[in-house]
Image 1 (cartoon, rainbow over the protein chains, first blue to last red):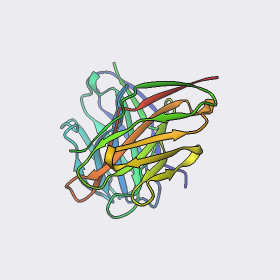
Image 2 (cartoon, rainbow over the protein chains, first blue to last red):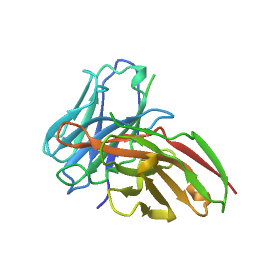
Image 3 (cartoon, each protein chain N blue to C red):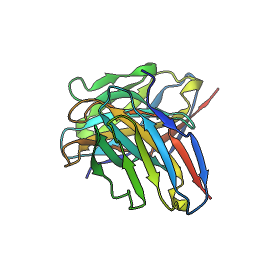
Image 4 (spheres, rainbow over the protein chains, first blue to last red):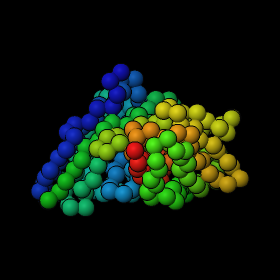
Length: 115
Length: 116
């Protein structure tokens, strides 16, 4: 068990560019979550998957954001036409179980800076 | 909708002193409560959780928390703080999202500084 892995750790991009982040969850975990954390705030829920199905999306997830988990293992989060307001830490987490009551295990995050 | 309030944005304590971080939640049903810690530039690490049963729960690194339903609180405590405890602490509540699962809602965090 190597924990939740996120890549890259840091990403600097220019406004208007597209970016993609990757998350590899703990191997036996069927649930995968994406959160966004801005300075001085707690993490805010974006979306989650159970296996390969995306079951819930937050209102925070605009049309420019898309997430996939094609084989129920790793996941990608893509942001199109980035804006300065997208600058944040993007956290991935995973958990096991059927009802989502198990604790979430977080990765170290991807810090996005949009210039 | 559920919410979590952490009234203290920043707390400074001396090494060896006791610590209490406050957390109040708002949720209509039985809450599932968590405390996480985040070191700079890192993800979140689970300290402890409360689901049911004994209202005093023990966690890692010598932390404990007490659930008080009457006060809607879940305060985190440590009898003697170490310099390595300096970090940001987040309280969270897991509540039914209406989409067949439970989602985690975080407070804004309390930053802990430790004076040697």
